[in-house]
Length: 153
Image 1 (tube, one colour):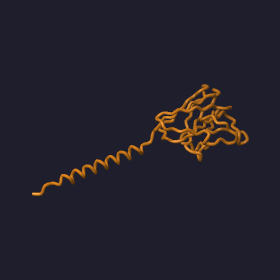
Image 2 (image 1 turned 135 degrees about the vertical axis):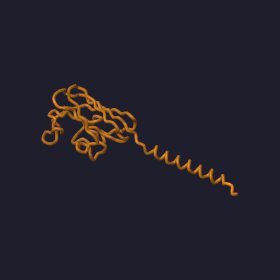
Image 3 (image 1 turned 120 degrees about the vertical axis):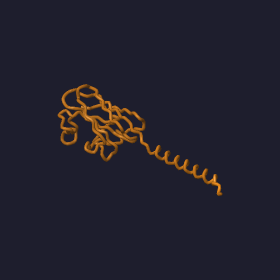
Image 4 (image 1 turned 30 degrees about the vertical axis):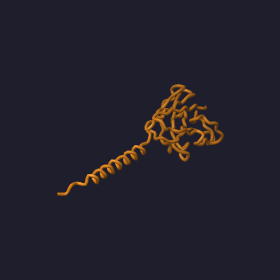
């Protein structure tokens, strides 16, 4: 009668435990934070139309609403409004908000360059020329985040 090799069985269990620990650690480490980002928009001139708030994840898409990560719309019926983007992965983002007074889903420009409707950016940077992503960018790394956008008319 052959006796079982207890050392081999214990070693196999140890390896199985170690492998399970490695797999669980890898899965845990790959989880990204799904944050809720609240954007408070101040300085709204209440009136017709809506406030459109676009969230951008990189410089290549910035100011191109059709390439925004997400866009939310709320009525422009008070001097301050807010929207909340849910399930946002951790990362670097920028926000552009504007008062779409005529509800045509675009920021109207005079001579193709100057905003004709109220507009604002996260971090409220000084702007000369077309706004860039980085001065407006901020990091999301917590389960909840907030940013403020002040509209300029």
